Length: 145
Image (cartoon, rainbow, N blue to C red; front, side, top):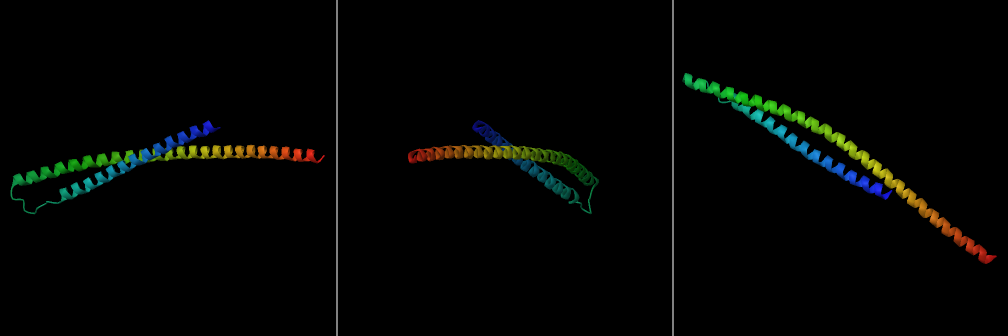
């Protein structure tokens, strides 16, 4: 019984480590998503800003147009990366929930086994105490007769 409890404790520790690792990965992934969001906001502001009313020459207008197209490509790329990062975060969240459930299951089984073992030890101690009491009572009875 003790070896089962020891094995369950090791399994619980492994599950807890798995939950901790997934929690860390999820936090990193959420930070990555936030970074993409900030990048998109900043690039959008950059793309929308800088629009001057009086662009003196056709070359400057062409450069400005090319600049905006380049920024828009980067924005689109960042949006794709953001969507991918969100999907990854959702997947990590689902894995975290599954792993946490597995950890809780092992924890409950471990707790149940420990309680069972304590109950068995308590019963064993009670039997020993009862046996010793009976022996003492028998000795006292023999001494009186």
